[in-house]
Length: 225
Image 1 (cartoon, rainbow, N blue to C red):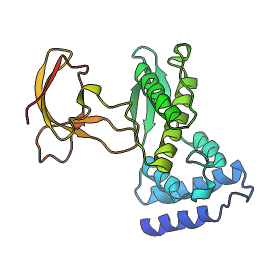
Image 2: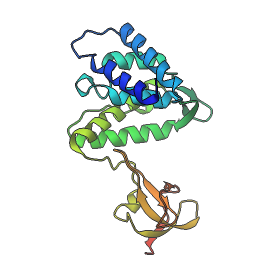
Image 3: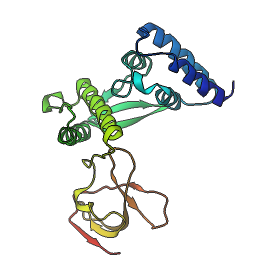
Image 4: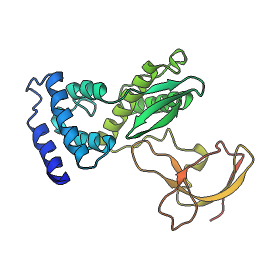
């Protein structure tokens, strides 16, 4: 089958998994293992294949974005994150490679999102200092990110917790900053997409994108255009 045919087959298989079908974890695991194999044979990465499956799940069969049986199955199939105690970060499997997330960054992001979620009527757990660097903290973080996505889907609101306070209101403007290290630079202020956006440093007005803002809090910020 072609990639498009495999994707349509995935959609058909998942559509038949009604919420009241009583599908077991074992059945879900066998089904998705087969679907993954087909998608991977078309040249998709593991990350892309999981995304196809997640996108094709029926909306009424979701709990915080993923059905309970599928959540258990995916956790079983997907490589588990690990921790690097020396560098104080989580090492997260990502396709054929990995990404990293610092212990303190995870806590700050989680707890900032929790405050926003509470303000919008959604419950989420904060990560306490005693959980720093544990897998329990990472599981809480995953739950919070899932709830945040659901809040955005249901309300259309975006969480400002990751935005740089000194740049709020300056989106679309060119600024000159002196960062906390004493380095001076100029850039256009952009903002990323998604429910948890960050400010971007865009080098030219006609650039198609930029990198996340670094060096905050700034010693100074001034608008230059």
